[in-house]
Length: 542
Image 1: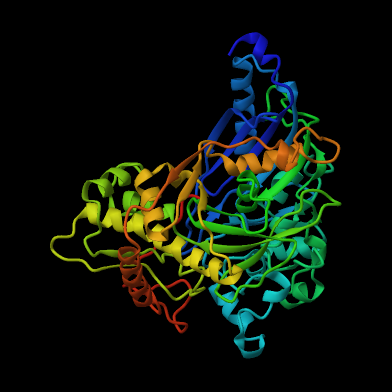
Image 2 (image 1 turned 90 degrees about the horizontal axis):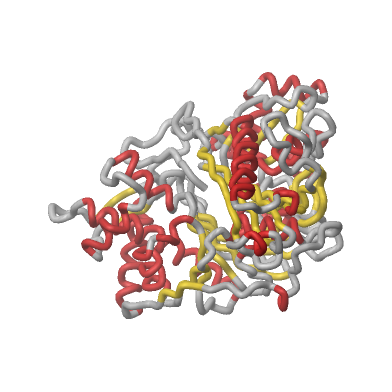
């Protein structure tokens, strides 16, 4: 790029993309949506007990500082003026729970990650307070079933089990937030005037938020016995929350004074980044888990088939809230890392594509990766992973193929549920996330769904969505979200290559395997003990 062209880039928008396994900072051209530079830092996972998954909130914050610093250095090496960065958006792993001391700025415990299972006993205890032990009792207020997945039960566990947190609450020093809240508070000043807020998409994943009134629900807070004074203020997904403050770890003072003006949970951010602004548009993101969201517009649709109702976005204080149906699968890309790290049949995650392509079939082997129970559409915490249909002929290639097929079958279950709830079948599936680089997986997905799969050539849709929200915010106004102004996206398209009868046969066998994965863990066993038969994983990426 010539120097004269670099000077004509116009306004830029930064995006903090804080996921389960890594943090990234990316910078986009607000006029063309072009990704100009980025930097990524891996995040350490802590597994203190079976089923427990934690992260250090200070490490997460430090990783953001490092990513910002390194990306700004790369931009300067490209002769791009970082003072053209006019806004910053935040996208984050959802549900992961942090409590910190507002007087010291220090976390009071590690962050409890969304996949963590320690709260099953808490869920069981709370269910006893509900008529008929109905885990969907609060569905029409929250859109969610009572599950270990959501923030309220993680926060309840912290209040029950961590003395420092109980004391801080009693002293009026405690603040609760999901990762977005922790980052925004810290980056806007922390203990010196930091802004304690979240957005509607992240609030809607706590089980404490009424998705209709768009407020914390006093009755829900009373049910979970959560003090409302520790909760962040809920804002829209696109407005100026505060300004970046000088941080000692940012040697250049980069981005000081730049507004943080966009905030979306990662799956909502991907929906925006895929430009799914119309009722009925959907996207599927393949990360550690798999998340299929379908925009239902300004109407909240409640599933009869195991899906969640969640807030898609609210792109401005005076803009309407839009809702989505969501199918959540706990284990997708994580199954590949399990093959690599736990079984050792892969040296790299990318090798799974080569192994699967060499055989082109699972040879009747089926893999149900219910390492953290089953999420949508079953919501069955007792399930555990199984590999079945093995013969003496089965080898590691067939198991690799079965693992990829499992991701596709799980997506098929989500798509079937969304089609039933919406009444209008999707005629193609827009996809994003790290696993979409696997062409074998993408072709398998199209074959199993019997519809085309469409992958954008610019894969960073989650970060792009947060940047779009930040750039479009009132008081920033450098990114237009008007349909006619949105940049056309080039895509790679995968068409079905097998007949529907074969697809249906394989899917039916998968469903049979799913049934056999149920009820490995029984309620009379401690939540920290697992069946010796069930397979488990410690997750590594969102």
